[in-house]
Every structure is written in structure tokens, then in C-alpha cells.
Image (cartoon, rainbow, N blue to C red; front, side, top):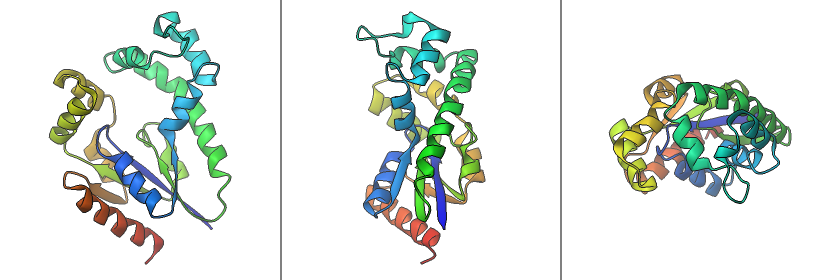
Length: 196
């Protein structure tokens, strides 16, 4: 019997680290960001609709989507964000379902930053929330992307509140500590899921 475990959290909360640990434990992780990225490549279904709705202003010289420019619009314009989400979420959901069909047995993890926003939680048996307080989120995001505090906060506020995600999840992994501390939490949670 197959078991699907969603892994969600906020931007810069440490989801990638957690999923790398899970993969190193021998489990497959389906990455929704990678799916979205591939669908938005030139000629992909998301690409075509972005072009139609937002125009050529959001293209790079090589014809690919200018993700940074589109991101600046999305994180500062609620109407544009709602429009983009209405385009991307259904297409990502279709692709996730296709990938999940390959698994008939065992545990598979689904990394989805927008798990609740895109209603992907309905595909999951249980959910892990990767949690980090806003203060640390802002610090990590500013350092990682070289952006100012206002833009970091705009990105964070564009997603569902992390405390809300935490309250909806079955398991919570707090990543404010060291990598080793996070790893121990991940192993404990995965063993609980496995029933060890």
C-alpha cells in the first residue's frame, strides 16, 4: 500500500535540507518546485499561459521566462499572484498525480511549498511542516538571495502563514538549530511514519 507524505513550509524555512535528508534515507521525493520550473520552460504549458496573460515584457533575451522580474510583480501585486496561481496550480496538480501513479507501494514524499494553497494536501496521507520563525526566515532569505528586508517580507507574506501550516500538519520539524539537530528530528519523524 502506498503512503504519500507532504512536506511543506515557508520560503527559506529549510525544506530542501529536510528533503535531502529524507532522500539520503532512501526515499523518493517528488519536488513541486521542479515540476513548476519544468512546466514554465519555453514551450511548456505554464510558459504559454504566462506569455498570454503577462506578455513579452516578462521574457529574457533567450526567450525563457524572466523569473526574477515576474517574481517582483507577483510578490508585490496580489491580483497578479492570484492570476498566476490560478494558472499554475491546476497544471502542477495534474503533473503530481501523474508522478504519484508510478508508486503503488511504500512511502513517497511530496515537497510542496504551496501544499495548502494549491490544495495538494488532499493527495497526502500525512503532512510534515518544516517550521522556522519569521525572524530567522527573513535573515536566511536576505542572506540567500541578497535582497532587502521589505522584499524578503513580501515574499514571506505571499504564502500562507507558517503558524497556520504548522497547526494543520501532522508533524513539525523546527530548523532553527544546527544541521545535525534538524537531521535527528527528520529521522525521528520518518521512523514514526514508518511505524518503527
